Image 1 (cartoon, rainbow, N blue to C red):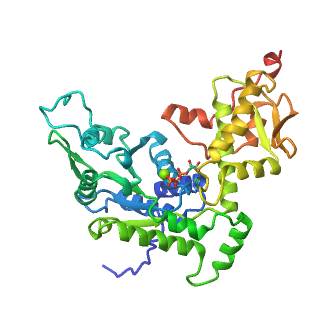
Image 2 (cartoon, rainbow, N blue to C red):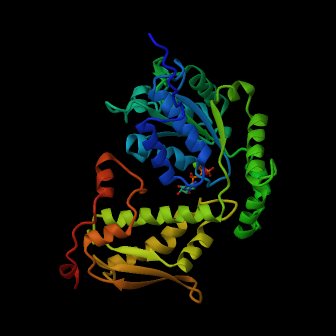
Amino acid sequence: MGRLNKRLDPTLSGLETEQLETDLRKRIVGQEEAIEQIVNIYQTYLAGMSSPGRPVGNLLFLGPTGSGKTRMVEAAAESLVGDVRAVIKIDCAEFQHSHEIAKLIGSPPGYLGHRETHPLLSQEVLNQYHTERMKLSLVLFDEIEKASDALWNLLLGILDKATLTLGDNRRVDFSRALIFMTSNLGAAEMNSLLRPNLGFAAFDAERRQASGLVDGGLSEKVSRAGVEAARRKFTPEFMNRIDKTVVFRPLGEAELRKILALELNIVQQRIFSSAHGAPFVFSLTDEAQDFLLREGTDMKYGARHLKRAIDRNLVHSLSNLIATEQVRAGDLLRVDYDCELQRLTFFTEAEDMPAYAMAQMVDRTSAPRVGALSASAVVEMPRAVNAKSSRR
Ligand SMILES: Nc1ncnc2c1ncn2[C@@H]1O[C@H](COP(=O)(O)OP(=O)(O)OP(=O)(O)O)[C@@H](O)[C@H]1O
Ligand SMILES: [Mg+2]
């Protein structure tokens, strides 16, 4: 047999992995390292190269509040399973006492109520979103620094041996689970580095300037503060079981602006797929966007309050306009900001637009998916508009 010496490219990834990466990039702004880690783990899993007898991956997400840690896991579920609800989420703070642990693993036989308790972490729960094609479970332990000792021991067992023993001694197998853990550890140190009083412009300028330095960048400092806080708090026994610790970067103005666009698109999709059947398109002026950014984002809480600001200032008003039929199927709405009134104002820019014209105006790729059926509803064109008949 002749010697081939054909050069191979180990940096290429498979189609399914590429799809995951594209989906995550569409939904998550600015957290490249976390995306890369998830994609790598998924590729290893698909190739059947994950370590046997361990979870598919154990990832620890640190970083400032509102920077996308939880959203990243949801986005992975949307991409892999087609449903944001496929994340099995354990809020560690809710399982402090032994009777609460019983909610997770069920109580031993003989205990009062044993038959009625359905453990939150049973094999059925873990496998409920499995399909012929996709047999991966996504498990999220949120705020692990708040876990009680009992929960902590369960977690160590899962991370190391991919097994959990339930109250009635049944075993739950986590070897097809991707485990995510999040923590706000080091948040105080990170926040003091972020200096909340600094405006966005100054922050971005500082970041740009710092990025030229070897280790003086603000993001790097924040990153180090997070990892050091984790090492101080968590035992080496725990840290050794983590495949990768990712510190989410604090979000600057440009990133928050992109997240606003994503969130507005989600509202637009809701209008298109809503049961009231009168699809219309809205568009925000720069001033209106600046207002929502001021209301919903800051250095300390990232994008955490953005949705609430959008609901309070935009969705609520849109709902009133729909209910009073001031906005109707086929309308193009301009949303502006009035400095004197200090609130958003709404104007009809066009009427009777056909469905295809409305669909062309909006990006239909990044809205969240809930359930297989509504997933297809989300990407459908808005229902055909019979604007005239819907008008009074
Ligand atoms: N990087 C990001 N990309 C896209 N959306 C984001 C990002 N960061 C935050 N968001 C938006 O802000 C909301 C809150 O973010 P998320 O819940 O992921 O924060 P977190 O990092 O988990 O914060 P906490 O530590 O307080 O739990 C998300 O639902 C999403 O709408
Ligand atoms: Mg979170």
